[in-house]
Image (cartoon, rainbow, N blue to C red; front, side, top):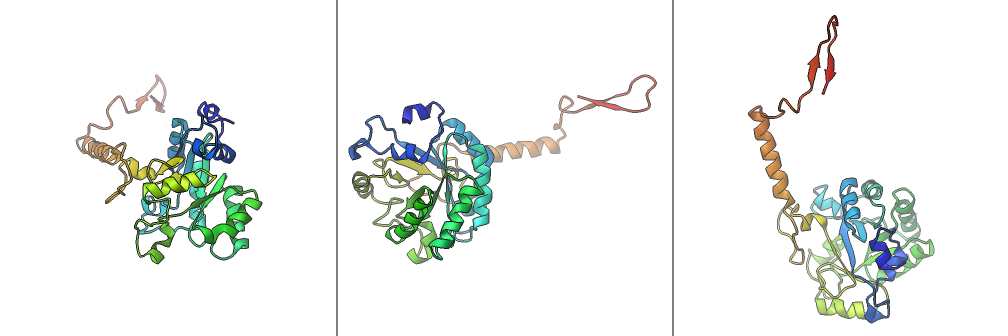
Length: 272
């Protein structure tokens, strides 16, 4: 299936994404950059899907941007399954990928495989994402043997925050890495690369939705571009609502229901 037909509304699958490898690596010259954003709930997933996003990642970043944790480490499998189900109900065209949270793939391949199967079987994920490079090769092989597509994650790996001593640029990453290194990796590997803070030469790009919409508290990463200030829109709307309620201008008469008492009737019927 070509990327052109997918842009017209066809369901995007993992093989479709593989075909989007840049022409320099021997793929079709008609391949297009892969667009990817995070989502954590039904309405957001539906909006992204209808806007034409290629991949929706249910990231464990939800721990920080939705649940208010300081890191992604406390996020549980059950929390990820809950949010993945919601996103899957809203996404009909985009490929839905779910992060496997910290601890869900660290205790042997058998347990890791059981957890990954839950994401596919119970939550409707169409691929899973795991952090780590060479040390995950055996696990990735086991998952693909079980017919579960896998998205790898190298570079600035948030689940390794304790080992790394914080969030900082890593010299061998695809997240928050020098664009020259990301470009070299993209040229040399046969699979598509999706960058975040890795320059424009990757086969696709991903951002955390909260960052691009201005819904992040505190400083946003250097690599993120803010496309809207939804935070100010929400705050302004809430302030206006509070003012209207306090001065009794909401609800108005037009926004109220009215009682109608018919002749000879003792009951009141409610009409709009």
